[in-house]
Image 1: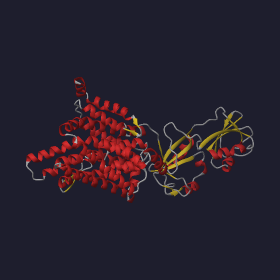
Image 2: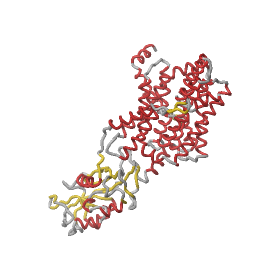
Image 3: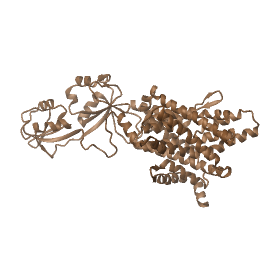
Image 4: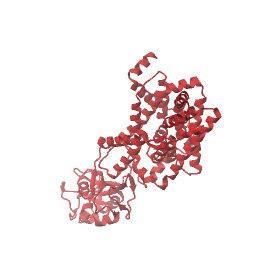
Amino acid sequence: MAYLQSLFHQSPEIALFLSLAVGYWVGKFQFGKFQLGGVAGSLLVAVVLSQIGITIDNGIKTVLFALFIYAVGYESGPQFFRSLGMKSIREIIMAAVLAISGLLTVVILAKMFGLDKGLAAGIGAGGLTQSAIIGTAGSAIAKLGLSAEETQRLQGNVAVGYAVTYIFGSFGAILVCVNLLPWFMGRGIRDDAIKAEAELLAGAQVFGPGEAAALPQLVGRLYRIGPAAGRTVGDIEEKTPGLTVERVKRDNTIIGLDSGLKLEADDIVLVVGQRPAVVAAATALGSELQSSEGMDVVVATRDIVISNPKMAGHTVAEIREATDRDLRHGVYVIKLTRSGTPVPLAPNTMVNAGDVVTVYGTSDDLQRVAKSVGNVIIPSDKTDFVFHGFGLVVGLLIGLIVLRIGSIPLTLGSGGGALLAGLAFGWYRSRNMTIGNMPLGASTLLRDLGLAGFVAIVGLQSGQQAVSTIAQQGISIFLIGVAVTIIPLVITMLVRRYILRYDNVAVFAGALSGSRSANPAFGEVLDKAGNSIPTVPFAITYALANVFLTLLGPLIVAFV
């Protein structure tokens, strides 16, 4: 034990990464339908390791959490701003219900068990995992006009109550949002997240890493010309919309290609296009070949940001009518996205500046089209650190702003500021796709490492004090904290299900974790969902919860 204590004293980061490694391993075990998960597992392991006595810098916790919450905001910024308005009224009500039920639970239990104002406020701060309550409650206690000794005692009890209840405050929110809620709704988070994503994608199919369609939409085929002998390339393409002749070989020599080229018997042609058109043209062209030397071409897909004023503000049909046939030759539009969301490619769909069109074709064809459409988004595995570094700076500066309602200080803090900046910079990136690149793998690492590291540090810092306080003062404070954690979540869950009529479990879980500003629970919800669907409701309720729950400090002091 002395050796471990010396080791962790010299290098506390070993304890941090040990908590993550063992915690994620423990979190993989499944007991029936219950699974702890990596975040909760890291928290428990960190509490165990904290009994050795570990000191770890608080700034690391702040940095990790800022990285986590910024990445979350960046990924969901476009969806968040589209979701604002009257559609958000249910999230506002939900955050208010949790704050009010949390206040009532603390006050009623404090009166039942004879708790003083300090302990009650500390239990509220820990059970609801809102550290700002410590500050607002402490300031309120200082204004009660009590003796210096009594004021100091009550303010000390705020810290005691917080230390004892904070660990379960984090863990209990995970249990409710990730395990109890899906059981209550009778459906899984992952299933509903997939369903909501499918609705959001407007029928577009999204493939995961290493996945591809067994029947791709666009295909290439080789044919030896038979029945089509005597026809021109232009005639074939005009009579078969959705098909392009890309290469012709005659007498073992690849010849120049233009719309007036007349095909001869035994010519070998490469056609590329939409599957139905290519299949339908087979009998009219000739026999299909498996291969022919020199007849393969490289095709690719490119995302192009629309900036040409001749296209922006016009419908798909109008653009097609006004576009020269030679410009369209060999280029196929796969999809159109706006602020990260697919837009149906119907003839009457309006195309806006900043929309991203995904096109398919040969390199030469794509370059020709890009010059007339807008800027090509170059695929890259590099992160734009200038853009995102500035984003984090802006967020952390916003977190320093303090507004006061009377004597009550209100602030978003570093986490709230980073979330707001992430949302704004993510939205801006969706409108200006040539800057601010962050590969999916990079943002996933920021989210996972940021949240799990933050939670592990909380356990390492608070675990020893929480366990020793329980041993000294009995388990009653801990059990009251359990009630303060669970009861408001359950009340809010019932209100949301039966009054606000929320049905999608993934959206429900995101909003519920946000209304409690329960970041560890949200991390687990996000992991279960496998996509960003829970993020938008979380972002709305989280911002509100930071304000509503902070106000509870002086209210608890006033009513207990």
